[in-house]
Length: 145
Image 1: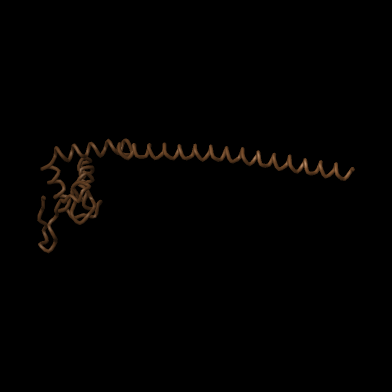
Image 2 (image 1 turned 135 degrees about the vertical axis):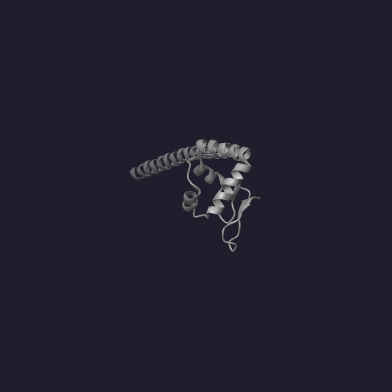
């Protein structure tokens, strides 16, 4: 990877590493894309360093990396911007849609079961009332005899 020596030899040289989520400044979780955002806004390295709590050497290492890998960095940066516009990456959106449809299906099933249960309860209540009414009428008939 790239490194830019710092003025203080006791400080570890600034490096750009990739831990699987894109190139980032070693010892931080700041990606070169965050540095690119600021550089595109014409921020000086000192301001970028202060904003992200980095050393100037770390910011310069990111800028050198961006210059040396301009095509790849910009291609990935555009993908990031497109995903941000969509709010979710396509695979996450598809998964979310499938999950929502699954939840909707479960909700429909629950409503159907509840409707059947309500109908069964109504039938049981009507049956109970009819039986009680018959018992009362039979009891009345026996009392009058």
